[in-house]
Image (cartoon, rainbow, N blue to C red):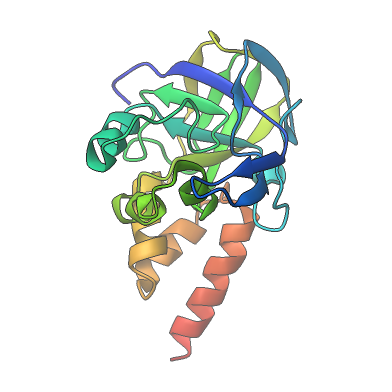
Length: 219
């Protein structure tokens, strides 16, 4: 990473009833609010939550990060203005692109220490919130999904806290590469083996990739 990572916004929020642009109600915590600071525990930021506990959250996915650099791209492509933390991310950052961040990388964020565990898997809630039915698909196609982290050391994080790379994972499997294999190359045995070799990989992805490899190796 050539640029020094910087927090643009810190956002937290609990599940609540929202409305799509067509007036349909749904319950989600995607519409987070900017915060000046919060305590980051192993389960995530205090005051933050999720609605769909089956597909989101857990210690391996305690923090969601998204790059501020992608906002202008989506706003130009869809001719819109996106609100802060559009994608339900806790930290909107600069200088931490998917092409540069690797699964297993460890970052100091304020007092806390976090480790990247997997790429974020976009869901239809993003489309519901924005009213842009193709946005989720485009995030997957580009690999600009953001990523998830576990918390190695708890601590307070503020909206103006610094972020620093503490250690690089030796496997150097970037989020962008992992996304490409996971979403675009489901039959790439070598690529899946590279991902699963990373010790820090989130368990949910590890189990999913193990099943993929078992199917591929028996066909």
